[in-house]
Figure 1 (cartoon, one colour):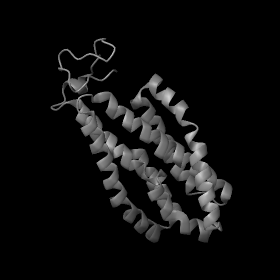
Figure 2 (figure 1 turned 135 degrees about the vertical axis):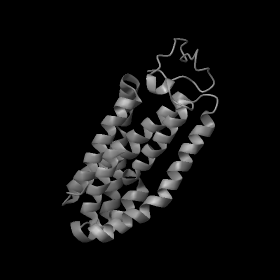
Figure 3 (figure 1 turned 30 degrees about the horizontal axis):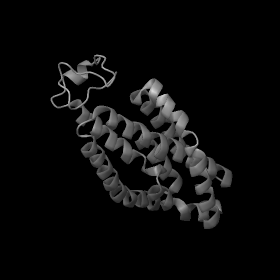
Length: 205
């Protein structure tokens, strides 16, 4: 479905190519412009990427050094290399988003991201940590971030700057709110179970 622009009327919305928009019952019955609903869901989706963001990963460094036996410098190098390697898949992910649309790709990416969190909780050596980093950065910070931004840009034209600003504000709020909760989870349940919990939460978003 090609979403209508926020500057177009509901009755005669057209895509950027000039073709009539194929709407859905959910969109037509929305009491507000449906782009705001997409923005709210995309903001929630951006918050769900936190386990793949540096602010989330950094909370587990002590656990990797104490329980897995890795030095802090090795963890930093693994994270850096994983970030670069994970980013190499983003052009392919972008093509898939163009082909399948944000909704289908979001479902796929969330599922893979949830599995990545669960797998990270089973890491027992540097290889497992490295593979976990690659998946978290690729499917979380990379792919989910791309999809959420793309969805907002599709639904907004005249107010696109405002919408993207709200999306960024929501991510900033999540970055301030969730790390303390993750830290409490690590203290209460251990880092491995906390990763499993985050995977379950991400899978339900």
